[in-house]
Length: 271
Image 1: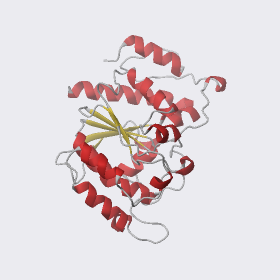
Image 2: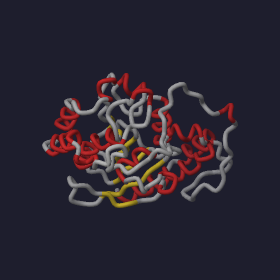
Image 3: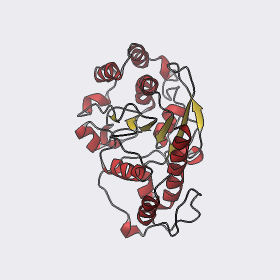
C-alpha cells in the first residue's frame, strides 16, 4: 500500500487539501497559476486534438495504412525479432519513416525489462531526442516523481517506452502512418516484456494501441483486456493523462492520482 508520508508529500505538491488514503480523492484545490511550473519544451499531448481519424485509413488516399509497403516492412521486421536486443537493432535499422531523418537519436526504452508494469508514452520530445531516453525531460521528471510515491522506479520495477521512437519535427503530433509504422514493433515489444499491466500515458498512446474510438478523457482509469498477434494471453491495460496535460489542466491532477492509486492496487493484487 502507498506509504502515508509519500501521500502527504504528493498531496502538498498537487494541492490536495485532505489526507489521501486508499479511498478516492474527494476534493482538489488547484494550484494558483503562478505555482504551476512553466517549461519551454513540454511535449504536446493529444487530449484536445481534433484531427484524430481512423488509424487504419489514410484520409487523403483512402488506402488502408496497415497495407502500405512501409507498414508491411515493419511487420516483417518485427516478426523476426525474438529478443529485446534484436528488436532494438531492427528499430534502429528502419529506413521507411521520414521523422527518423530529422531526429538525433532513436528512443527505444528505459527501465527494468523484468517488470510487472510497462508504460507506453506518446513520442519523444527534444530532451528525449538529445539523450535517446524516453521521458527524461520535464514531463518525464513529473512522471517519475509521481510514480515514486506509489513505490515505482525505473531502476527496480518499471519499464517505459513510446508509441513512436523518433521525435516528430517541432513536437507535432505523429501522423497516423508514423504510428502505424511503429505499431508492429510496439506490439512485439509488449510481447517480449509480457507485463502484468500496461499503462498508456497520453491520448496518442491510447489512440495507437486501443484505436480511435477510445478517448483518454473517457477511458482513463478504466481497465481493459489487451492482446495482439504476438501474445497468446490477455494483458491488463489502462491509461493515465500525460504529465504535460496536467500542467495545462491542473484541476485534472486529482484524477491522475486516483488512477495511480488504482495501478498500485492492481499490482499489489497481482503480486
